[in-house]
Amino acid sequence: MTDASFLEKDRSQGAGTGPEKKPGLKGFWELERNRELFFYWSYGVLIALAELIVSYYSIKLGIFIHFLLLGGVLFHSAYAFRTGTPWLYLTLALAPLTRILSLSMPLTDISPILWYFAICTPLFAAAVGVMRILEFKPAYVGLNLNNLPMQFVIALLGFPLGFIEYHILKPQPLVSSFNMPEILLWFLVLLIFTGLLEELIFRGIMYRAAFKAVGAGFALFYVSFIFAALHITHLSFWDVIFVFLVALLFTRIFVWQKSIVGLTVAHGLTNTTLYIICPLVF
Image (tube, rainbow, N blue to C red; front, top):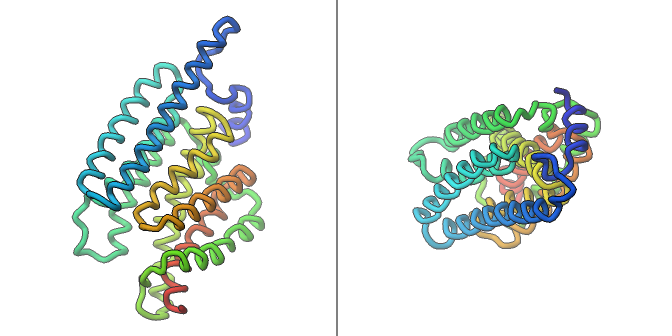
């Protein structure tokens, strides 16, 4: 099925798709919709709470809560398959899985580049698995070459965004000097394992799932909230706000362009500017 046919299907089904609604059951379906919204936001708040606990109280307790959340959303998605609405529950599993993998693997004695590879490869596999289960085609989640000149312009957003975030976080550099081969290697790592992976999961898969589950307005704010919550571990309130605003911007661009190509490069350049260029310059 092409990207256009998926969009046409979404329009024909509308938000909160599932069994066909009957006029005499309008009140029941409204109640069902509110119940689903309650569960979606409950999971979102619990993800944020688990991140707060990891960051400020106990890593072990935070991971334990993430394990419970992972089991909860997988169970809920299995149940939701019976009513034909599993999309958002299944994609939400990628959020706690991200934190569980990043904190549970004993990889402190290996190079940071290998750490990215070891953590993100299973996440890529999980993301592709979710796409296959939900029958989301690559073009539908933004893996296409729509409007390449505009994608280049979008990619350039990474430099100012990285500059702003650097002045919020002031992180240590990932490299010790302007060694161009090392910088290029790190750019590729950040492009693939943060830019492509996170744009695929949040702007591509999770936004599409939230759109199918409830609608465009909910999807915009909900996915941005989840994305920002996973940055609580940076230990900066202002960075969480900044990331939330950037997520809103990136999601709006995805809705506009139907592609994550420019956003992927922008994301990679943001992190390259944040962790390599600005720390070495300033």
